[in-house]
Amino acid sequence: MLRLRSSGLPVGVIKVMREKGFDRHTASAYLIALKGLEVIKNNE
Image 1 (cartoon, rainbow, N blue to C red):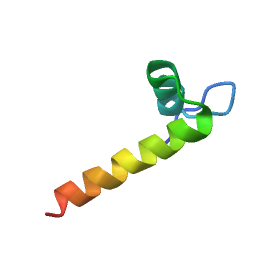
Image 2 (cartoon, one colour):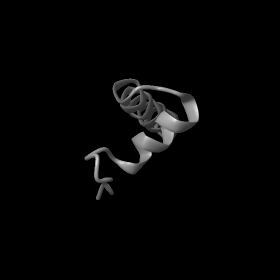
Image 3 (spheres, rainbow, N blue to C red):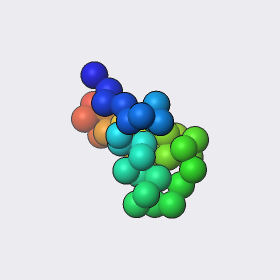
Image 4 (cartoon, rainbow, N blue to C red):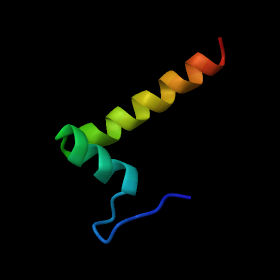
């Protein structure tokens, strides 16, 4: 289950936005890409 802030954004997206300086769309895409790479790595 996703934890949401009062802004409606998942906590992970907010963390990436702060750490990397991304906007919310880029931060979300970044997290999706990381998850995809993790799935690929685990299936090799």
